[in-house]
Amino acid sequence: MVLEPGDAEGDSTNRHRGADQWLFVLSGNGEAKVDGKRYKIGAGSLLLIEKKERHEIRNTGRGVLRTLNFYAPPAYRKDGEPLPRGKK
Image (cartoon, rainbow, N blue to C red; front, side, top):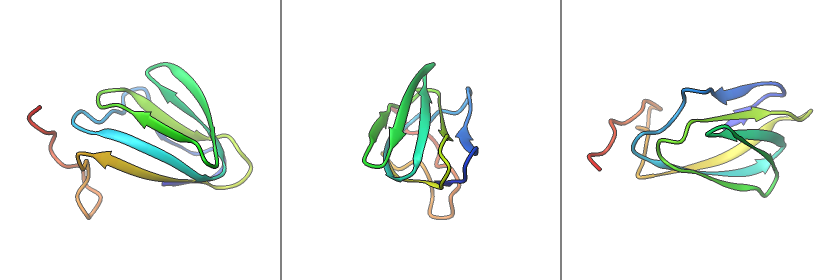
């Protein structure tokens, strides 16, 4: 994910019903809001957002915030569209 300064991804309703999200910060600074709790994130930060947790990632720095995100099980198709949630 790439966020310009001041940009955000997600909001108070954003959640992945069937997948955990691992977010690793490659560069930049930001803030993660997960189920109402705020976490400062920066290069080298690793954050687990468990399925069903509402979350938002915001770039609070002066440069680009770049993250590498993994979803288990996969949450998106190759074209970026969400997959239907799993049966568990």
